[in-house]
Length: 193
Length: 193
Image 1 (cartoon, rainbow over the protein chains, first blue to last red):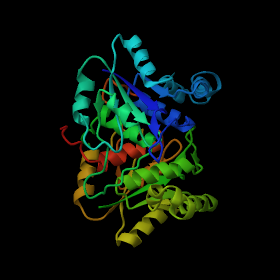
Image 2 (image 1 turned 90 degrees about the vertical axis):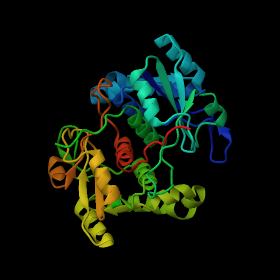
Image 3 (image 1 turned 60 degrees about the vertical axis):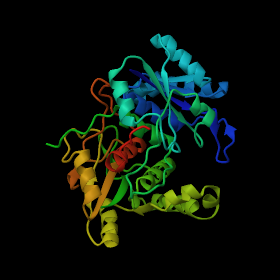
Image 4 (image 1 turned 45 degrees about the horizontal axis):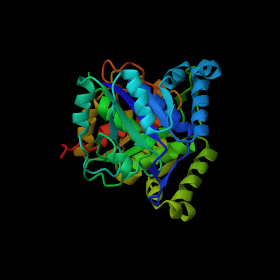
């Protein structure tokens, strides 16, 4: 499948459980672009309803894709080729449908999801063997609202450590994206020589 | 085993291959503390020879562990319990030896390592079944110097995507740490219901 990622800034929860719009951060753009590019993601959508924030993202991406940023670090330029903006999840889905000719399946992620619709291994098999497009979404703040999650095709369970390495699970979204892309698309470690 | 992580700011490479000391960044402290805590790591060492940078890290960690930071976000306080500083890798090793009663095995990581001494799966088995201590190290900048790598007990191969999802491999250190901890200590995804 063609894989896409989306970092959602609305609708997400704040620490009191209210629905809010979070601010875009520069480092999220960099880290997720680099992770997306490293795992062969076709497009990484920064999703925010705030037009000024979308134009900020576009300006940052343009800086690294061309001119001074590209000269300073051509490798970073390549990661920024994946970066796109969208005003909503629906707009990102429409964009992918236009690019690929079909609507993507959508995947919700979240630390608090204890029973997902699908395991990492099962989704990995689908991504690696089936045709079509898949959009894996990540919430900022305290995560996607439950309405937003319900609207997705599939839900992945939260990642956590093996039993006995304890139940704390408060990764940054940057860490969660990296881990989830690796579980879905990472090469299995080769045998040592 | 007791697992420890270290983020090395010296000796590491810059983009021209010179050996340098990088600056500590606030977000690396947060993201690696949260990932370390989530995977049951006993201590996360921020390693820099610059005393002022070590005291900066200690001040940031104290802010989140106690007082205002703890009130604002008690969950973050728990992650910061893992944070320690060391002036060198040798100092971190000595500290672990004192705490556990034995010298840890040391593990080098790096994007450019193509043939490691040990696979992720083999190291995972050791970590989960053997006694002792293990310090997994991560280089900032353009990675650990080859001398620093050679001095370690073991070298893990760089992480990358499955074949066909291409050869670009330029993750942030924040992403690399998260992925490697998950490969070594992450729960395998349960079957979907």
